[in-house]
Length: 154
Image (tube, rainbow, N blue to C red; front, side):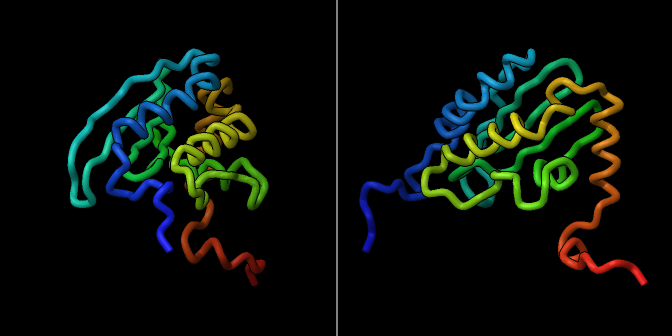
């Protein structure tokens, strides 16, 4: 049975989602000198989407929304690190909260903020060298199905 109190995906405005989500991230990020910059709003093959970013000097946390929070990417200069890869490199296995399956799309932003607060020190306050070390570590780590095979090499 359809619960009419839950928003349908078609009812979710990606611009509103982006702005509400940015408001949830702002206390953490602005406390570390990041400034929120709304990004592009457009229509792609999957429908309308909106982008936003928190920027400080050469560091940037980019995110996109459609029906909920989508891609999250950390940048330092030309170096990019997706949130999932960042968390694999710095958080204990299974500890990261984003991405997850939540009924309230804004809970994804709350989960992202919790991950950044708990494990994002290298991005928030670390040196460029420390964050780039994590980027290198994450790029060397297996991903996809290869990451599932955790048996020692023979």
